[in-house]
Image (cartoon, rainbow, N blue to C red; front, side, top):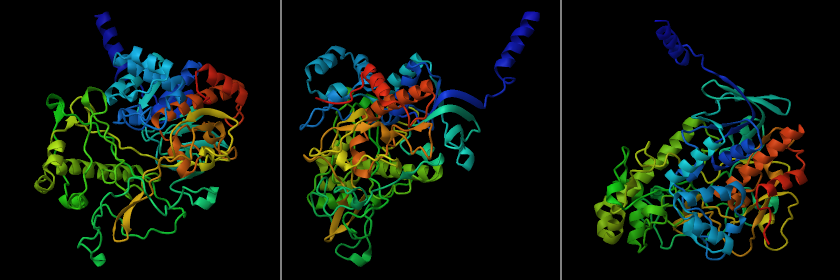
Length: 543
């Protein structure tokens, strides 16, 4: 009887009688379980620091676990950027290779500088398992579904030092240092750190590729599409997806953002397929521009298997796709409710578009081959299993960016006379890549405005440590790997998942050194930081 009672009360003690812990204390608190947040956490744990990883959603890994498996590594004909991938980022891809049994091919490619895009690609479910297993190896405490409270009390500071942050659930997380590893930069903003959204005018940093574009050539309409509800009648208004506004002054700044989209994982395997279905709020009229595009002689985009097991990472870099220009301007600084609304609008539109292309009779009459191809694809049953095969998050290509004492600009990326960087903590090896921000009417036809990509003016970018830290007058124990102090156009060279992993490792290393030396994040000794990064196999420069 005594043993039974003991077991009974022990059971109660583990359940209903156990008080819920609402206050937590760590060396470092990371807000944002993106790929950068994960590598920052792992690096801190490797350096012996206690760390909490808070993620607003139910999944860690950022876009790598939300459909973006087509990593931008060695996938461009004009350059090979894999030599810039080092440290924990490279370890992630090694772990991916192990899952697929391609370790030997992967190491051979690295050692002999073989350019093989497929070796860097993966399924989202595999990336998520790799991230989760990796975190568990280091016994890192992860808190899912933790969003910052939407109140002035979300961040507590003593002078320039954050002391604690609060979540919507009422939990309090105390830390000596904090990392904002979100794309949205919510912790930065609520901590009083200067941020910006949108495109700066060229005049701000004496750039040439920022602001409103006089001419947008990349991913421009390949056919002439009439934009008006009543063709050729401007007074009738414009059809959906087009903004009825003038081009504006070339080079001027605005608050517009490059388009967001879902990175769609699709499959042709009938045994692993969920067919496209009509969304609840389906509105066929939303897709008029696609019909007009086909009627004008255009060939619409189609899925193609580029990931393991015949899956896609269907992005939206075409002249007409599921990029939704001009529909995200309220997202970065919007409330959680506003962001959820914008997410749902994008989801409804994209679900409807895929259903439309695969099923609409008029599409079939205009281009039967197009419809047959789309009808052969569907959502995979084995991905995003908690969301009916649909990614839980869309691709927020940029949101807030920090504005610090040091700003990365177009001048840092130039091949000719680039601004030198004395304190690199990683490399960004990608062109200045920003998608169009809006679709307007120009010369009587639909026109995508804002896309900048490629060219031969750029070179790999050494990323300055100073771009990751706020102004000392604003906050001295906060660092960000995902919202670096950079202009709109320069951020386009940085905003890749593998680059975020690199910056996450570097941010974690810096926070650990600041703890060890009892100094501010701004006063981390760079020679010491550099030595530690090189020890961690980080790539700080290219031959």
